[in-house]
Length: 299
Image 1 (cartoon, rainbow, N blue to C red):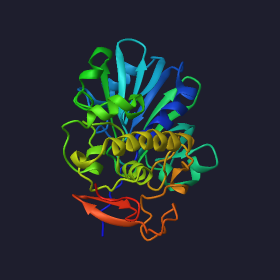
Image 2 (cartoon, rainbow, N blue to C red):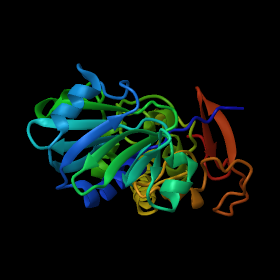
Image 3 (cartoon, rainbow, N blue to C red):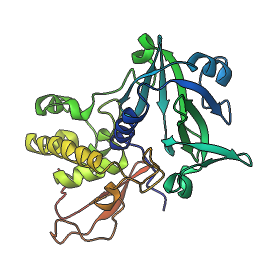
């Protein structure tokens, strides 16, 4: 069965990358850019114009909005990056050998296969580089005017950031909302950054069945989901994300959340609450959900 589809990177993975890149590239000047194909750069003039517009520009800030990375540079332009399913940004030094980019550093950047599908590279004035490894080639870059970032179709209809909500504003989101709780949590127009992994983990922690109808949830149920959302996302950021699939840190290393997850892809394992339940997988639309039938009851 192939119900479960990769949904990495989610909020914790993108937040981890952004925090790491802030330490590395702010203040650096872009001196060159390389791409193996035109496709990732979504703008008139393609790679040639993109390179011309970013060369000599200093990196001013690196922020996250939902699952997107937004890098502001000198002037009135911003680089908007979507890593998609399998892309992840890495910081290091590479050289071309026989048409392939090879890390100059030993360790995961050089040895982990997931870090070797390099599709494009920014080169900085300190001789370091920012590279995108993307086995499926879905990642993309948009160069946009600063004032137009909020109007990009990718983000203009997005819901709020879950870690910026308080209990009251979180609860208001659910008023007059209908549908099953897991798909709603994964809807970026409702709330951003939560995909397959963290929806399962949040609902497991909150003790709410993924098929529960929102209009049947109590105020206490919603409050537990709120607390679990903050708890799980912060915990995942502390563990630097989940590397069950393609995601890696800018250092090329794996995140650590996959080592402690309690529900996602834990089918057949005894529930970590030791309540006698066994993690079960069901299908919801084209996705799967993992839960404990013992303590996660349908509302």
